[in-house]
Length: 207
Image (cartoon, rainbow, N blue to C red):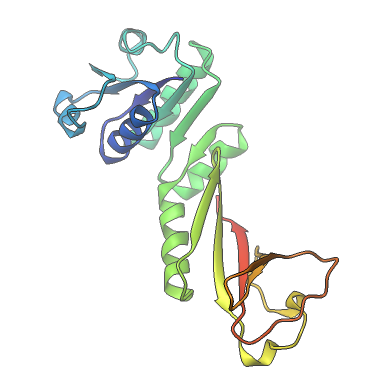
């Protein structure tokens, strides 16, 4: 896949390197050519220095023929503008924009734009790390992310159906991790009783 990454800060650098390691053809644009030093010596993609909003710069980086574009500069307004240019003038359908302001991210998402909000993702991850004793696991599907975490069964719920355990808002029961390491997927068709040492796995969409 031909992917154009706009912005070569910490996020853009990491994304470009991951894409490159997975065999994609990557081009990176940044207005400051010094940022390209962040890319490893093994990076096989191309770099283009120039203003990302400049149509000539976008063309020279392959915007006309790319399959996807990630717009990840630190400027929300710039990211939205470039995303619109990519879709309207270059016909790139798969465009994902970084939006740091959660309020703006919600608005742009409602307009059909693919967005990722690092502020919201970090906030949710820190909240979970503070309030849940076991490490959560996140899985992303396109721009949607679900988090999975475990909570140990307290004595009050030993011997009762798993469906009766308390849940936070937006959570659903995913399964049960038994003390012997066997995981049982949750189904409303079965009245699984909890045992001492069990852990309940909860799932929640966080973005």
